[in-house]
Image 1 (cartoon, helix red, strand yellow):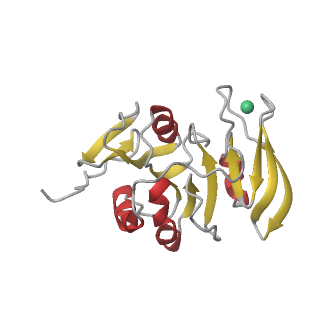
Image 2 (image 1 turned 180 degrees about the vertical axis):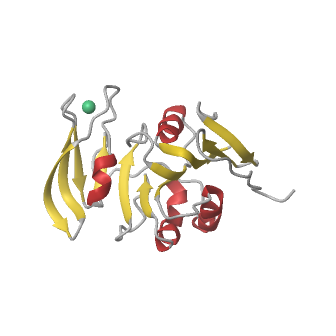
Length: 204
Ligand SMILES: [Zn+2]
């Protein structure tokens, strides 16, 4: 868990926005290997173990099977239109794009995909219910999960103008404008950013 990302993590409980208080037990350079995050509002606690931040799941608990494939990495980069390096969330199978996007200078949060190795630019977070991140901190997000709470919390974490890729069956959250869709996914942008041209997902 990259230490600079810890400021972006948020409690999963529905209450006022707050940073989490962090205690670090073991560090490697600027990465937290073992630690504890505590919510100053409700006292919920979230461990960092083996470099992974665990929200409401027992450390070591794998997530359900991912759908996107590792070779979707190039697609993820194209869909998200990452013109300049930023902070990108890759959930489930999309995390197969982690190395590619990190190699382009992005800071990557590999979300609910423990198969991905942590590197200097890739941190791992695990949470089943929502995306436990602050509002407007992400430059892009690619989700395998279609659950409304997950997609809506991911959308809230996008900066204005930032893009999200999500499964076609997921409802488009408020505040996102659909740019394109095919049978598998839609691509949408958070309102408020500068206008960007639609992307074409697949040739018909
Ligand atoms: Zn809390």
